[in-house]
Image (cartoon, rainbow, N blue to C red; front, side, top):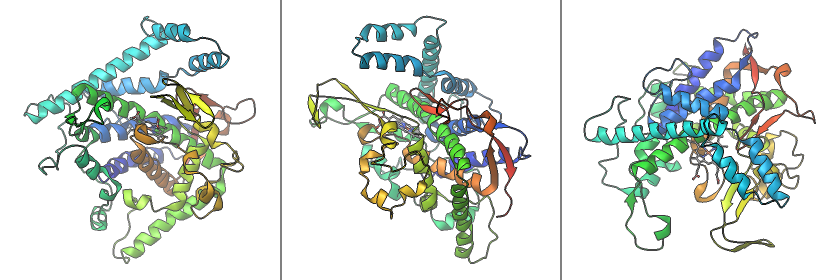
Length: 448
Ligand code: HEM
């Protein structure tokens, strides 16, 4: 996180600058699309060290990959098909043939599934090229995308998973306050280590041989390319969508906005006191990865947004062997779905679930104290939990911090699509997002 907070600081500052340039209070901005661009930029630079600059004007070799990712985010929604098949299965129909037919569509040119498959294959091929370029770079010949980031710890003598864990653990991300003071703003520091360079050093034992003394082997380049693709795809719509939901819901609850702003403004006052008024604080100064987690209300707001709008509404797990889950017998091979969305709205877990109330995540309140820790899993749990959790939280919090400090976003009510119950309409597929996106007008923030 220590280096990623710089990437995030940079990409969020670009977004803020763009917003300020349209803060006439008139122009209607589809902010959800801007957030997706921010998310692509952040994840691309953090994962593969390539600054896409999609928020500005992207050029160069990475443009095709960027277009493919943008197009993936736009069209990869199988919501209705998946929904139909699931419903038929629930009614006891044998859907094996239907699933086979749907899968076959991916091989027929002209269908949406075909386009999506081609797109994914293209993204994968590009990721393979990037991975290969890193290998070549090590032997001195780089294919010209961007210079690879240096590997500062490669001479430390440590190898494998332990090294990776040590370097990425929360305890390692402390940035010295001296460093923060000197920089004063995010600057344009080059990323010293991206996720790809971490992956190239990971050594694993295959799952089938975990119990044996099998030797750890590095990931193959194809495995790394798949992981890179997962990171790029998994890190875009999730974060962008969560930010759009946050702006939408905070606009509906002005008291939350005021309380959040008070906390953010308070951070500047505290920071000024820490510096004993020696330096005039630049407004570009924002909390780093350590400081941002120390803002309790911001943390509660983000949790509540993830509860009300879980971007991945369902998790899936397959039983590796026969087992019992409560009173249910689960035969080996069964796919078990964990309905995060339904869990987030159970009144026994979250009283008045329809109400957006960040305080329910306040560690000192009974609701939070007595809630079972596993009933709220916005990033999943266990070995397959979200790989980008910390990056996503840092990005979402940093951007909200900047937005509510500097500008006043007002949701354009006429553009909000409603469902039959008068609630905001949602597109629910593999991911869940606000239907039609979120539009805002941007106003300068007065009174600080
Ligand atoms: C607010 C933002 C995000 C949310 C709510 C979110 C949520 C999730 C959830 C619920 C899962 C499934 C976990 C499970 O099955 O237990 C997941 C998986 C994953 N996420 Fe995220 N995610 C977010 C952002 C990101 C970002 C920024 C990245 C990349 C840097 C990322 C990369 C991944 C990957 C690679 C997986 C698959 C992990 C695996 O299968 O082993 N996510 N995410």
